[in-house]
Length: 447
Image 1 (cartoon, rainbow, N blue to C red):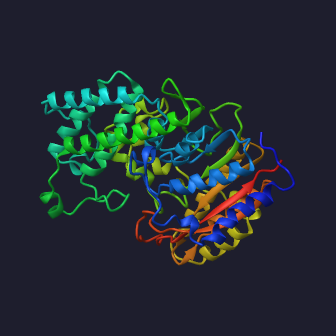
Image 2 (cartoon, rainbow, N blue to C red; image 1 turned 45 degrees about the vertical axis):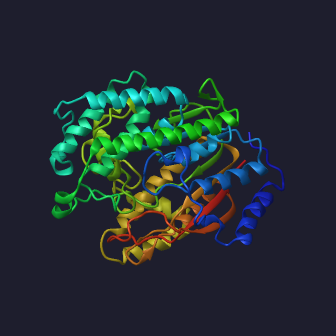
Image 3 (tube, rainbow, N blue to C red; image 1 turned 180 degrees about the vertical axis):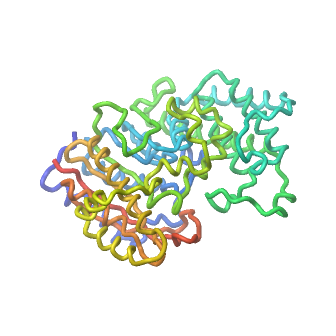
């Protein structure tokens, strides 16, 4: 339970603003955004800066040391999860993307460094002893996205991972394979979207798939050892298991929580800034790696339907469906004057910008109803947000989200600005330009 005094919001606001006053670029973490231990397992689109999550948690807990449970309903690759664990707190996270859920579960342990070393040695030995040329997976476009020699070697790795008895260890191995798939496919690595490489590039590439996988796996073993040592030094593990609670599930944020009656003290999250197709295509990025991973090891709800097409996961995300009834739009603009003005401007523009933006906010609004239901009265919400552009019009996500939450009784504590020095996003596309700034929106749920 969060204990609120008359000075709680003033104290938190003062602490957060003081950091910005001392250094106006404090929240950018320019030159100080290293990805160490659990944060370095895997490349994932638009990852949150770990040092920012660390600073937010430290300042919030200085005001509210009684916080026990933290949630992230758009968990992504688990930056918040790792920082929460390093403070001995309990965590509940979810994501609609099976790859995100896999990465989070691999980061959550258990932590048996010696066993991981031994299992890794055995796995690499099995891979080197496998001389089969069988291709173990089949999907539409496999020959387009992978050379034959790559398909053969990825199949060897996949077969040998499946022979590992421990599911937790398999998950750790699958994360390394996901990264290897990304680096060995015929899709460009300069973008998160699936874009085939030029023929001249593909013809000249030297790809040693098993060597790439081994390098990634050995690196990740080192990161896991570092994380294990940190947790052990803080006395946060008991016989290799994290002493707090960690719950991660594959879930559409618009639907009721599967985690029962548990309520959370603090939310820290960075939701999508728009529909995935026109902003960050998490689903496209994950499509090829997930083809090679045993979905049974990810989540009981991770079905083959998630991989029906390259756009399936994105279509299940916020704004993935553009069907919006007129009365839904009327309800949205009644709750957010900023959204009303935005849609009015978009209505006079070319293309289907109005439909895309309305569909996204329809789904975000549905998510808020479910998310708020999981939070305790008086709990804090920290939202990291970016305002993209649709055509020449900026979409003020931060202001619209603030108004949607205020309509539900939430109170604004403070809004901070951060410049983005190096967040990896597409430089430009026909919908959105690169965002150079984000907002950190701090709000409190009604008591």
